Every structure is written in structure tokens, then in C-alpha cells.
Image (cartoon, rainbow, N blue to C red; front, side):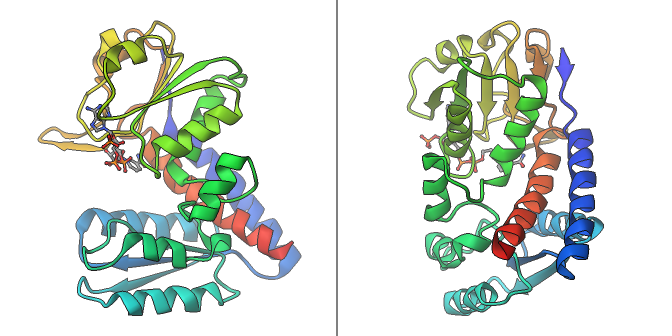
Length: 281
Ligand code: NAP
């Protein structure tokens, strides 16, 4: 079984991106900039944002975090986003989710310029992805895609099963694999016989949020299994895949932690650089 080392792959990607930033700096006399807006005091969000800022700085991006208290008015956030949309030193804008209940998530997403939407959640970018046009691709599915391609460069005709249909993960992942000529099935909480759907899959991507949902006897021998899930337990973080069982049958599997997570942040940096390049062109 190939243990897919997301940490190592992310490190390699970050090295390439660092070189790219140096080259862009020479060419344009400026570097791409990432601005993250963090609202409230939620600890996981604070940790994610700190990691994003640290990684951005390490590869030479200009990075900035704008923090608001939990009680901030929606209008203040929307006005700040509009200001950042018009700021040429900002290539990418990310508003850390989840948001407090009084702030409309969709309004926030749609206020970010599609050209600076490094999370790839703006409807224009969602449309671009499903039409096969250029645009930002959500960071986690992009990271999963790059990991899958490392294991298998030609995915034509493979049967891929997404577990979960969120805009952030399952739907975008399905589009990426469809573009690779996979035959894609998207499953969700109302799917009947999930096990049977999984058993015919050459590729399984689990993005659900249920601890060890995917069992060893759900997985075909030699399948590639990507575990996006992050579930807190007393023993630490575990994924949506029963690692010990699935590792006995799968051809390749991502661990949790150390699989998809590091790639997500590296892909955020990649998206910021892509936004910068598209703006320059
Ligand atoms: P989400 O928006 O809550 O979506 C979960 C999806 O799972 C939904 O489509 C839901 O179906 C489906 N689902 C729920 N129960 C199911 C079941 N029993 N069988 C099949 N499908 C079921 O979650 P998300 O934002 O996509 O995140 C999913 C997981 O990935 C979470 O654990 C999250 O923490 C993790 N995550 C990890 C990273 C990373 O970098 N590693 C990044 C983002 C998210 P319905 O649509 O029918 O409700």
C-alpha cells in the first residue's frame, strides 16, 4: 500500500511556488499578496489562519490578516472586501469560514471579486470549473486532485466515487475528476447503499465529517482512497476512513493528519499566485 505523504508533497509544491514567487518578483518588481479576514475567536479558525499566514510568508508572498470581533456588522466586512477588491497589492482574498450566524456567507462569497477568490467559491468560479474554463479551484479538492495524479497520471475511464456533495469539497472534486475522463458518482446523506457504490470505485474521495465511515470491506482491492475528513476524538484527529482496515486493501491511502490538510494550504498559495498572474496578464 502506498501511504500518500501529503506533508512531503505539500513541501515540494511550496518549494516550487517559492521559486515562482522569486521569479515573479524579478519580473514585476512586486509579489502576490494574500489577505485573510478572520471573524471571531474560534480556535480552529485561528489556527488555520495562523498556518496560512506562516506558509504565505515562508514562500515570499505578502500576507495580511484582518481580524474582526464576533459581533462585527456584516456591512463592515462587505465594505472591507470591496476595498480589498480595488487594492492592486492584494491578489487573493479569503474570508475564513465558518462565519457568525448574523453574517450571510453567500453575500460574503459573492462580494469577493472572482479574480481574487482564492477559495474558488464564487459562483463565477464554480461555473468556470464546471465549464472547464480558467478560474480558481477550491483548495482542498485541488490538493486531492494533485495527490491522485501523483499516484495515477492517467485517470481515463476510472470509476470515481465522491462521498459528500458540499460546494467546498465533493462537487468541485467531482468536476476535476470528470475533466480527467473519470466516470463520477456523487454520494451524500440520502444515498442508498453507500457501501455498494464504494465497492465499485477505483477512486474514493471521502469528505463527510463522520469518523471512520468508510470501512475496509467498502473498498475494492487496489483503489485509491483520499480522506478529507477531520474528526476530533479523544485520541486526536481521525479521518472519514477507517485507516487500519482500508490500508489492508487499498492501493494508496492518505493518512489523517498528514494527508490532504497540508495540500490544502499549499494550494491556497498556488491559487494566490495564479490570481496574481492572471491580473498581470
Ligand atoms: P459538509 O458541508 O458538512 O458536507 C458533508 C457532506 O457529507 C454532505 O454532502 C452530506 O450530505 C454528506 N454526508 C453526511 N452524512 C453522510 C453519510 N452518512 N453518508 C454519505 N454522505 C454523508 O462538510 P465539508 O465542508 O465538505 O467537510 C467534510 C469534511 O472534510 C469535514 O470533516 C471537514 O472538517 C473536512 N475538511 C477537511 C479539509 C482539509 O483540508 N483536510 C478541508 C475542508 C473540510 P448532504 O448533502 O445530504 O447533507
